[in-house]
Image (tube, rainbow, N blue to C red):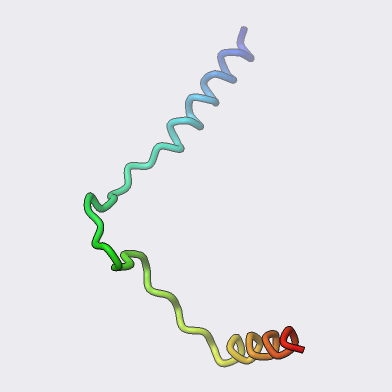
Length: 58
């Protein structure tokens, strides 16, 4: 009986932990991205992507 009670309490806690109270926009503008801005790639990352692209083009 104790194991069942503990399991139910744990399951309830996990369910409640999954419920976030986040602010969401109520309206969206068509064609406008509302997320975070992308970070710039470093020169090393750009070079790696270029080399990978050249390798695949062969």
